[in-house]
Length: 318
Ligand code: ASP
Image (cartoon, rainbow, N blue to C red; front, side, top):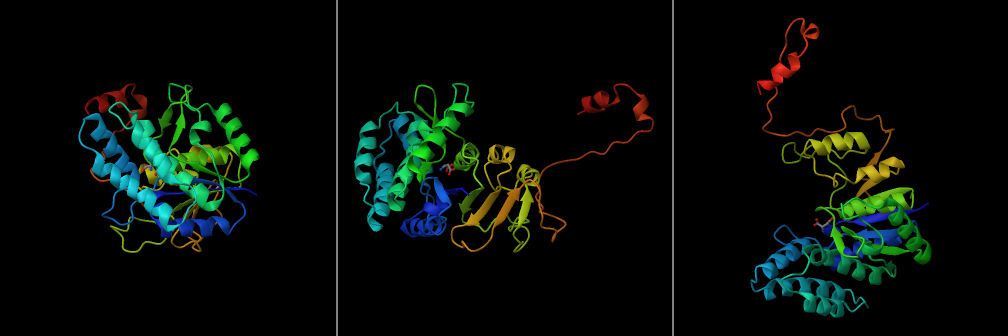
C-alpha cells in the first residue's frame, strides 16, 4: 500500500503549515512520496512565491530594479527555515540563485525554483530524500512526456531512497533544461508519480475539505461532495468549478487510482474521493456548476432527417 501525498501552496505558506504537513505525513507510513508546490499565500493580501518569481523574471528582463522583490522571496524562504530550525542551509542555495540572476535567465528555470526550494526545505524537515523533478519527469522538445523514461526514473528513485520529496510543476527537456508545466501543474506531477508507481491512492491536500456541490458565492454553505467519478469531475471542471488542474485525472484514471482531496487545516475530514465508479448512493445530484454568458438556440423543423445538408445550412447562419 503506497500513497502519493501532494500539498498545495496554501498548505506550505508558513512554518505553522509546514508543521501540519509533517504531522499528516508522519501519521501514515504509507505516505512515502511527497510532492510540494511552492510557498503559497499566508492570507488573501499575500503573494504566492510563484507569482513573485514571475514578477522577478519580468523585472530582470526589462532591466527594472529587482532587489525589493528578491528580498521578499529570500525572506520568506529563510523565515520558514529559521522558524522551524531546519538543518538545510537554504541561504547557500538562495545566494547561488542570486548570482545566476540576469537579463537572459530562463523563465521556466527561475519560476521552478519556488517548488525546488520548497521541496528542499520540506525534505530536510521530514527527513525524506529530496529528488529533483528534472531528473524524473522527462519531456521531448515538442512538450510531450517521455513516459517510458519518466517511469523508469521514478521507479529507480523510489526504490533507491524509499521516502522522497519531489518538487511539483516542472520536469526537463532532453538537454536537461527545465520545462515548466502550466499553472497549478504540481497536481499533475503528483498524478504522474502516482501512475509511475501504481500507488493505492493519490492524496491532494489543499485548504478546502473537498469539492463543494455548488459555488459558495452563489449558494450559501453548499455541502461537500463525498464521492465523484473522474467523468463527473471533468464535467464540473469544464463548467467552471476550479478544483484540480484539468490534466490531473488522466494519468491516474488509466490505472483506476482514486484521488482523495483533503484539507490540511482539517485533516480528519474525509474530503472528496474521485474514482471510476461511485458507491455513495446518498445523493442523486453530485454537483452543480455553470458558465455565464452563453446563449442556446433550439431549432426544430419537420422532416429534417430526410434533408441532406440541413445542419450545415442552419449552422452557416451563425
Ligand atoms: N506554484 C505553481 C502555481 O502557482 C504550481 C502549483 O502550485 O501547482 O501555479
